[in-house]
Length: 505
Image 1 (cartoon, rainbow, N blue to C red):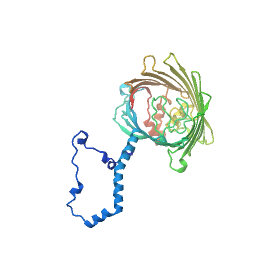
Image 2 (image 1 turned 60 degrees about the horizontal axis):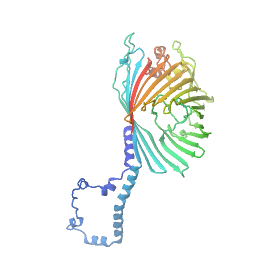
Image 3 (image 1 turned 90 degrees about the vertical axis):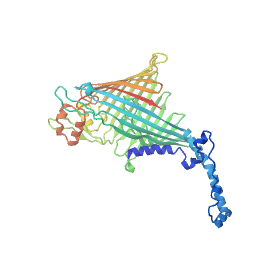
Image 4 (image 1 turned 45 degrees about the vertical axis):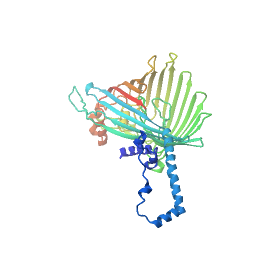
């Protein structure tokens, strides 16, 4: 059913751009006529029907009827004019339409602790984004982006072997294909003053590179290591009121995702204001039934080669459980969930970036970012339990984080090459994840990406595995928790080698 809906959406979008066969028929030429052969002789309809029996009275009356004469004239005029109008309109639409997309082939090789590299998992997938973008006139725009994703991952099955070789991995040949509508929206303006965008679209708020606590409309956190943001768009109606002279912007958003009742519609408001010649500040507000009430502030300002960005969010009316206590399998003790709807939590990000221009044509960017997460945990045990219960998101489970990065684009004569280094540390569980990425553009179209990442530290968020004591004590948990534990890795994936080929068209 899902495949049919996506296919029908694409087909319907294209059919809107062409005239119907009945309208286009008068413009069609035969193949012989196109290449200069004599046209087929025309058939004289009157001569063909001359000897056929007719009703003389009816025929005479029809010829003399002024009403029928008017109808015939109107039909003849419509036949002559309508195809030309439709063809012209369809041609204008096609001329104003852009069709493009992005193709990506990706593979990833993993090295698991206590496992031979040859037996460790290998994953591969393919992604195709195809978009249709048209502007029938200066006041309207329509956009559709379809995503096709195929996962050919070699699923790992772990089974005890011996004391020396703890697990083994084998391919199962599992492949899954997903089709999604990433974006589908219509945009128009009201008196060239207010701009409205309705449908599935992308909206990103916040100034952090690794963390964005003020990105209130996002349903999932971004992957800060990825070069391409793979998150799908959100259902919403966005109203934008810009003030070009002052550089200010006002936004109002009705969020329609996960809406089953009228009062499920969320509301997000944001104002962006220029500060001096090279600064900007913003204030955001978000409210939705069943979700926390959120207030956000962010500020960005530049000083010479330095850029300073900060954002902070305050949350209350939170229904997410907060865990307290200890996880002791021997005593059959698990953390207890606490709820405090009146408490106010804070999440804050500070980013400092420096751009060093080491010659006339080249530069390198260094950045440092810190994150204080009032919704996180400062102990490894509670953090792990919250992740196990799916109550915390990756990179938002700990209480304190620090990250650094460097970006070296097109150094020297290597005008098609870029190097990027990222490192993140969870200060709450002392785990670290690093990644070095290199990209190369060849034939001015295809981007090759290669990367290596490695984690450091014992079990934790960034070096994730289920501790042995949890595995042994799994029977003490409820059946639903036992199923989660069984599906999670028992050994840490310490090193990952990956690469991709992508092309925009």
